[in-house]
Structures are given as C-alpha cells and as structure tokens.
Amino acid sequence: MITALTSMGITVAIFVGLAVVLAVAEKKLADYGECTVSINDGSQVFSRKGGVSLLSALYDKKIFIPSACGGKGSCGYCKVTVESGGGPILPTETPFMSRAELRGGVRLACQLKVKEDLTIKLPEDLLAVKEYKARVSLARELTYDIREVSFKLEDPAEISHRPGQYIQIMAPGPDGPVFRAYSISSPSSQHDLVQLIVRLVPGGIASTYIHSLKEGDEVTFTGPYGEFRLSENPDVEIICAGGGAGMAPISCIIHSIYEKWPERKCQLYFGCRSTRDVFYLEQFKELEKKHPNFKVHYALSEPREDDQWEGDTGFIHLSVDKWMDDKAHKQAFLCGPPPMIEAVTEVLKTKNLPDESIFYDKF
Figure 1 (spheres, rainbow, N blue to C red):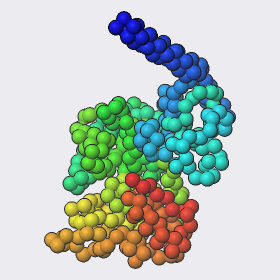
Figure 2: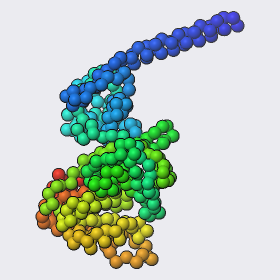
Figure 3: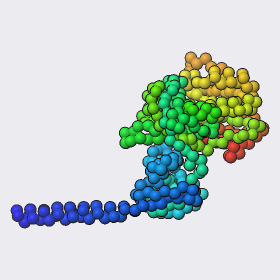
Figure 4: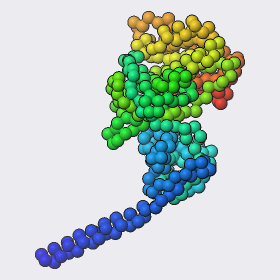
C-alpha cells in the first residue's frame, strides 16, 4: 500500500511539474515584448505589447476597420495589406482571398497576431472613421419585420458620409459587444442624424437589439465605411435595385441625388414578396411626380390572392430587363440577397454596363 501511494505521489508530482514547466514555457514563448505597427509609410506609428490580434491593436488606437463578425474570422471584411512582418498567411484567411490578394500580402486583421514589428497599408478613408455616441430620436415599423430607426448624434455631433456608405453598430452579445454593419438610409446632406432600415433576423444579435431600442436610448457605432462612389457627373444615369432592408443605401442615394441634381435621370427597381412587404412606395411615387426623370418600379415575387396589385410581378431582375434600355452611360447600385444581386448583375451586363459601373452590397 505504501509503495502504491508513493508511486501515485511521484506520478502526481511529475504531472504537476510538467504543468508548471509548460506554463512557464508558454509564458516565455508568448512574450513577444513591445511590437511596433507602422501604417501607410509611417503616417501613423504605435507600439503594442505582442500577442493580440492586429484588429484588436488597431481598435485600441481608435483605428476602426470593417469587421462585421466581431473578429471571429467569418466575414472577411477586415482586410489589410501587410508589407513586412506577420509571418505566413493562415488557413483561416485564405478562403476570403483572391489570388491577387494572396500575392499582394493581404491579410485578415482579426486572424493576424502581432508577434513582431509590422508595416501595413490601409485605405485613407478608414483612417477617417470615428466612433460615435448617439441617441434614438425616432423608431417606427415599416413592415412586420422591418424597422426604421434614427440616431441623433451627440459625440461627435456630425458625420460626413458618401451616398451608399454604412456604419457598424455596437450591440451587446452573450460573449461581449459585437459590431454589425448597416447601410445609412438618410441623405448625405444630413450630418447630425443617421437613419437605418433594419430587418429583424430571428436570433440575430444586432437586429434584435436594434428592434428593441426605444426613443432616448444611447447607442455606439463606428463609421462611415464602404466603397460606393456615386458619379458627380449629372449626365450619368443611376440605376438602383434592391429588396427588403436593401432599401437603406438606395434611399440614401436617391434622396441625395435629387437634393443636388433635380433633373438627373434615375430608375428604382425594388422587389418584395407581397404587398405586406411594400414600404416607401407612396413616398417614391411623390418624388416621381416632382422629378420627371425619376422612374419607380416595384415588383412582387409572391403576390397573395388578396393583394390588389397592378404593378410588375416576378423577381426584380425581370423588371430591370423589361424597363431598362441599353443606351447612355449609367451607374448601378444594388443591395439585397446574393441571388438577387447576381441575377440583376447578369441583366445589367446584357445592357452594356461594365463591371466597374456596378456597385453592390450583399446582406
């Protein structure tokens, strides 16, 4: 018995000793010391204790880059170009990269650990992104599952954004705050307020949070983000196509256009399942009366028997094909489910729109 107890004690001592050695080794190996991050040829330089993700290091310095999944490596938004440092790309990053990006040193900031000095490049637009504090000034239901919410800015008190850009709102999650991307629906001329159009996703952390907000509630978001660039040439005709909550950037673009260019040509194509999914139609019909060069086309893909509908039926790309000509120089802005984006894009190409004239957000 004594021998067995002694043997057991020796075994336990060995395991404890190994655990201590491994803990010390891990601490030593993970101690990368102070690492320097240099951005855009040294325009910004900061030091950070190594071991954290580059995304976290940037956020700590109030440098906000897109990260719709909150740094979990599932959205592929947080791309940066690494010029030196960083080590080899990880298997968790490659699914989000094109061949050109792989050759060009593009990495996901949420997956890249700061273990050595890094030299990176970021788009200049991202260096202008800020964190905002605001309060809900209006919240109303547009349909049974889509809500319009307006945020009055407090700190900073104003925002400057291009038509079609988006923000990332911070929502409380089970494992801490998460950020989710939502397009701005208010016109770009409105600097003291940000309006969103949000569909309630069952089980969605951020959409559930936004649908629960009441007037006076405080919110935090970062922005603006996005690559939409509306042509400043008023002779360029604008095509907008979307569905559901994809109305947000489209509404922003259309109202921004007619505040600045009252005579500009623009066509709106918007798809809904049935009349209970229709919103803003009367508003756009009024705008159509005021601006003869603005044309509105809504279509129902699954009209119900009791729907009194005289407009187009079928998927929205069919309406684009039916009503849009292939003349004049055009730009197209799309926002909606990926299948809709792909179908409309194919139609636009048959109408002679080149890839560089087609902008889209898939959600």
